[in-house]
Structures are given as C-alpha cells and as structure tokens.
Image (cartoon, rainbow, N blue to C red; front, side, top):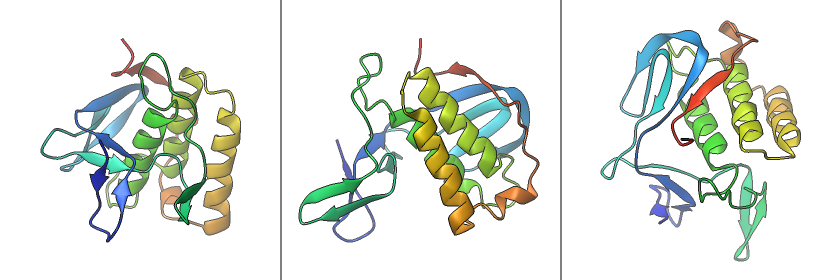
Length: 165
C-alpha cells in the first residue's frame, strides 16, 4: 500500500514495514539513527508499522500527464513477490540518504557496489546497465564528492540477505 509524502500531491510507490538487513564480509564502524543501524558487518534498515520506510524504487522517474517515465523497476520476482529491483533500490536509497551524515561508515561507491550485488543476486539481467548509470550519475552530478573522502573497500561482498531464506 503506497504512503503519502510530506511533499504536496506526492505518494511513494513502495513502503517497507519491517526491518531488513544484509550481512557483509566487511566490518564497518558502528552507526545508528532512527532509520538505519550498522553494527559490525550487519546493515539494518529499521522499519515497522508505525515508522515505515517509503521510496519510489529506481530513479529518476517523472510523472507527466498521468504517465510515469523513467527507470523501470522490472518484473515481479516470484521469490519476494516484489519488483525485482525492490530490495536493491531500498537499501541503496537508505545508504545514500544517510551517506552524507558525519560518521556514516559506508561510502557512496560501497553503496553502489551493494546495489549491484543485490541486483545480481536477484538475477536481474541488466544489472550492469543500472550500476553503470548510477556510477555515471555520481560523476556527472558530483553528488558523491563527500563520499569519496571515506575509504572504499573494493572487496565488499554481501554474505546474507534477510529477505532470502
């Protein structure tokens, strides 16, 4: 069920109502706020019925005359019953959202690598197009400038996904 935004006439496409997490082969510095917790090698998006996490999936997207144009979220994944890019876009969104905060231990490049790995694990065939696009977006817009002051671990791998049993 979509949820309204604080922005006038805006409804988010996706809403997460329970915690999700990934475990990596890398131990990060601990970090926590009301939305994300990073403890050791585990990154947890905190969500529940009272504090939902809402986002629009893969971006950018534009609404023009009741049509939505932009990056497609792909087919439904039969395992998760969500769009195939659902978890990748959610985790990437929250990592980028807090990536500019002081003390946040995940660099933009690491967030992008995590995005790519989740898409690969979902068997999303054009993962490399989406990954290349977000890397190009960072270069063109310089949005990752603050992220690059952080150390990027090139060998980061996801070892466990909470939504895959």
